[in-house]
Image (cartoon, rainbow, N blue to C red):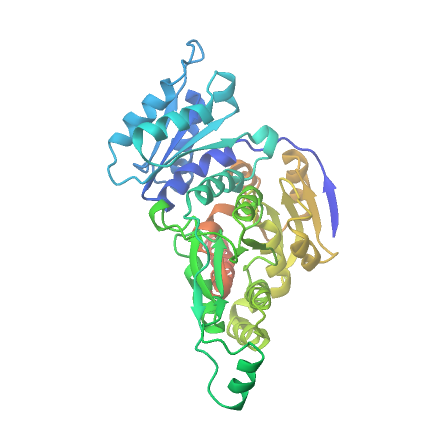
Amino acid sequence: MTVLDESGVPDVLSPLYSLNGLAEKLPDVLLILVGTRAEAYLAQTLPGMISGDISLNPHFSALVLDPEENVQQGQVASRVIEAAAGFPEVTAVLLVAGRSAELLGVDANFEVQLAERRLGLPVRAVDYDPARDGALSTDLEDGILSALVDVCPDTSPRMLELPPPAKGRSGFIGNLLGRGRSESREVRRRQVVILGASSPPGAWRELAAELDQIGIEVVGNIPGTGASGLPAVGQGMVAAVADPYLIASSRAVTERGARVLRTLMPIGVNGTARFLQDIAIAFGLKANQLNRARSVWENLEPLRNRIRGKRIFFAGDTGLELPLARFLVDAGAVVLEVGVPRLDRSFLAAEVQALGTDVDVVESPDPRGQMERIDRSQPDVVVASPGLYVPLVARGHLCRLALDFLEAGIHGYEGARRILELFVRTFERAEALDSVKL
């Protein structure tokens, strides 16, 4: 794999258009964006412009700051309290404050402390700055997940009591040696929390069902379905990372005393098999997923035949491009290039190794240079961000929005089928249109 760094201009819209979708996943959390009028407008209208649904989630709102006015301490907290008063079902408030809010004099940490004391609910600040942190749509989600980890109950792991040893010679000898006490021994349960895999809501349950077959209990998901249903996170637990770039939330889980497991993302057949197997190994279990993966591949053969040899160019911005490309290469497609806003090698070491050396990865791609390479290579389909989708279609390229994959649910073995079905439907529609033209 060749990694190029073009140092292109980041798509600063990416974090903003993910906000409304995040609010849909967290029905009992009030998300409040503090920023300029332009930021509020983009966050509230861009998702509808892309999806065709202009309706806004009621649990997402924006506090617009006027650059001509000085922000007084406590002013934002008062407006947060007013906004939360209209939602009695809300159990937590997340205040999203970017660089513009800071420049306009907002001390987000002070404001949330003041609002929390008055509301009697958890209120947390989520910082985002695309110019500093990158422009992944998952960057902001990582910050929100990190804030939710701070809201999770912090309890010691539950214990499983085992009966005392049976009477007999071994019990008698054990008593003589001081090991046959009547007190029961305590053994930690095999408990795991899944970090990520939240699109669509409940997607992580497919992974939980697979782990249950192995004998591992998934106690919950972060972000789950809201603040009231967050799992306890503490000593002796394992948190399995299911999405890339969840760096801040992984750090927050580690600070709780849980062990963070990073392996292949559970995207695609081989990725899911490796994810499940490595969790089992973390608990000292043997869980060979080879037969299970082989069976899934056989069932996917008709879909594989439709994409085998197809040339795919990833210019998306979801942060999931690497695992998606890895799966499609395994399925027989030809991946020409993978564009990623940034490449954290330490966090994505397993994905980088699994992708191999035949695929070019361009870090922070320059949009103009990227479009020129697409024009030259003429791929069968381009997985594009909203910013590139329209100009690429205007140039005659067949495109699929990167966000379509998130909405479809791409985690787990069933997610692998949904990924291939998305590509197959794209090709079938294009072929149908070509036949009409003729």
